[in-house]
Length: 338
Image 1 (cartoon, rainbow, N blue to C red):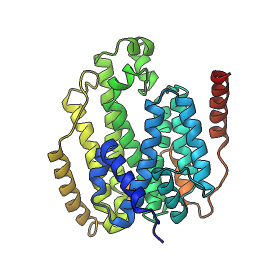
Image 2: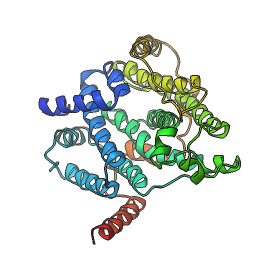
Image 3: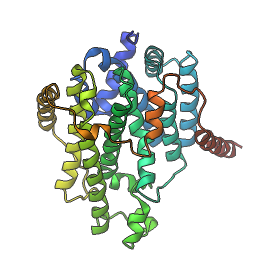
Image 4: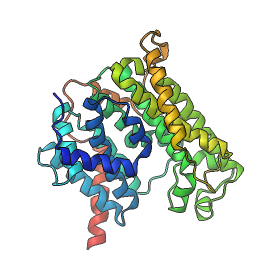
């Protein structure tokens, strides 16, 4: 059963991705239509929700609206907007476990509360929610529920988010956001508040950015071992997504790991090259043996996503942790509106 997305809604989703997520839009061209179309709906819903929280004046209200929108999607009564209608069709057609978009909601709630992360595990926990959850949902769209494949998809999501964080250190700092592990900064004598007040590309910040990208590189490599578990027609697109994001990390490295004074960018020509290379690499997955790293356990921070996506009868209720942070936001919202 394929998702029955109205053509006009799909066109709106495609437009949102074309302007808001160029890397995914490029990689999605290599996916078969049966996966590409629901993936566009998924990414459009997530992209627009993320933009509302990141760029909106009232982040708390944006998260609470997203909670209500997800409630309506899973009740079969989506908000009357193209992205919501399209995502509702995806949820119904693919039996999308609610824990996966709820994880995304929790990550955005953490953003709305201004949460910072004491160590790398905290950064990975955040990345699991805002990115690895999307990787798990992509597996669901490909009708893949194998735990090993899901773990490697989550690795790819983590790697992409660590790359995003590394690329956006300066942009985030100027907006008052900090995603680098606080213990890395404090061990080097950097006061996080002082850095946010005056973001500079000091050797310590460059080193932290380099460490983050080194972890991302290891995750990209392990994620590749899961590609043979995917339908053959989907492999070029997934390899391309990883290659394009890894290329962004390479651009940060070429800037001397300075993500403060310049934002790393890749060219259309580079993206085209990665698309072509990914098509060739996908061919090798048909004949090469599956690497042992395929069976590595998931990162502790993504294990809950693997379990949720692999489960035949996923739980419908929200987690206690998510309910707690939503209650915190509701209390804040009532205080602001009083």
